[in-house]
Image (cartoon, rainbow, N blue to C red; front, side, top):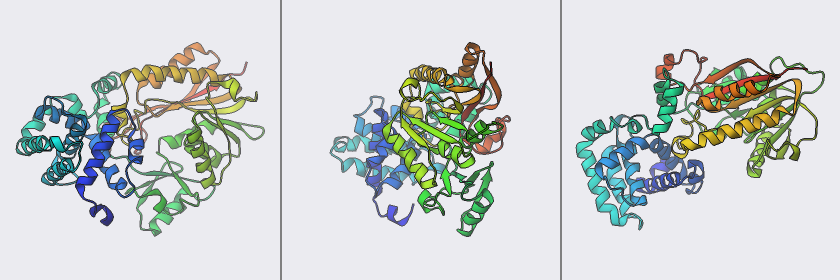
Length: 441
């Protein structure tokens, strides 16, 4: 914590963390909930929120032992916040006694929780006395042990019988901060030197990537305002080169990024080719983010607010040489960056997302040139959204062929990286890639 954060009483931060947690439980994303936190509190609160979300399954199991009858929502959120942060010494952001004292103070200072302050105090004092025994009891609960919903764990066990534990362990670790260097303005070697001169340690990650040893605020990194780099996970950086590699064209390629916001992959396409890119997104606010991304990087694309599946509403009749379909998905591969996803998703969401992905594939296949390529990708580790989706598509489209593709990339816990031997070297999110070619008649 920096000096400014240390001046803010911990009880105030805990109140804000509990409020974010309560909003996540009601279905709001952590990002949206954190936007409501005052700027002076936000950096410290975000760190504590992410920590709490990564241990929420354990916290809820502990709370059930301490208070089988669920307390009122505000009190429950505050109690679970404290338990999530304090349940294990080696990973706690503060000493357990400090967290307990400040949580009780937070309860006393809020009208919503003041009536339960003594109850919260009693629960947490008992937790301090019996912590080891209580934690051992919750070890029998898979949600507490893995900090994921039961349905999520079972789906991974079915899809990845040999790797599910490694995937779950990776999800509960911090993701590295990886940058994509804009090759029009620098190179990996040059930017690594720039970082070194700024006193920042980093390593190359793939053809365009740089992974920092320690995360930093993006605006504080050299070259951000000048468009020298973008923040993008190593797995996501595979998309643009995979789509364009070996694709021949007599003129400028006509490219479509079908679900483009916030614009990272659109920008990468423009950084490595002189083709003309059309970028679609159904949300006007997210399209504005595409414009902002491209403006910072000094790039241009045609950005349209449109549902990619409603072809007649946006297509001008000109077939595309290549299409990038980064389809809406469960986001099950990026849980380490967005730890709220596991608690927001419902098992029933998967079938709906699979149907949306199939609808997009069917619609966009119509606007692809014979001999052209479509890259289907999702930031998911669930086979229903990857391997199974493409198998179904190929079974119903005889003019489609699957080119060599990475398939499923699983997030790797560096401590147990050997558990997933088929993954390429590197620390990256979970992703799926299938490169499809449209056969000429």
